[in-house]
Length: 388
Image (cartoon, rainbow, N blue to C red; front, side, top):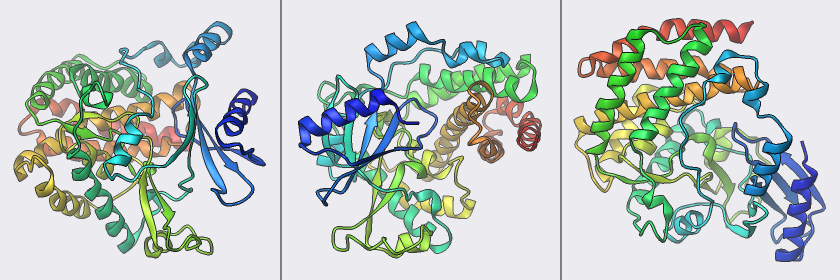
């Protein structure tokens, strides 16, 4: 849906900053967040298209709060009443985008921005993402994506200069992930509150994992480093390389192109395995476990902290457990509270990954058995609801 308010702001920025007016503007399907995206088409090739990234400003949020009830207030599902712990708001795209660009990381170019209007004009990196990768191309593309992780972790700056270096994967963030699983996933899928054993297990997990992560090295992480946030674009040596191909992974992999990471504004400091968890244990992509282990083992020794194999794989599992609890919960909440069921069919895969990671660590953390024991019922409920 095209917002007239957004269109006015986009056109105003194009006129003032670029002295160009788009002849066509189309909305771009976004994820489950509140940001809106539009593809702008211009006359000529300087460039011919851009992406407008739009988010509500403080004044927009105040106006919306006064004029419209929230989605949660409108929702009839009982889990809508469960409000998650408040976390610090996500920072703006700048200066982290420019910082990563200067550090040699592949991010979209910025053409103009108006922070007061909440509009940024960015390079159009196309529609193709790593999600489409299949077969031999998949391993090649994922290997390249994994190589960006140590490059990202080698960067350093003062938090005063780059706020991402002052944002930490801490206890409160860990608590919020398990809170959502307890208050959204279990009651949302099973129609009952988490029982005493489940609540006790979650509380114990938060305490033990929090202590474990507190003692881990902390490095800069993208934070949402998944296939959907890694785009392919044609390379400068062959600007039309992909114009006559299909969107198959093989065509993308064989073309002269570059891999570009988007959605970088959430970057923070986390254990060194964090981004690899996001990439390799992704709800939206089914990777073979052998490929996951191979990719992880290839990149582990070249991480700046070079964690030993046993420590790295253990921390990978623990980070995956927390991440997957949050990811699954967001899909459940979106489907039941906001009526957005686009990703509902990903829930069983997310629960299967959760069962794998938790099962491998049950011998060290017996409290995980309370979670693994409920996963079959959650999976059955999600599949039943999906087919209803």
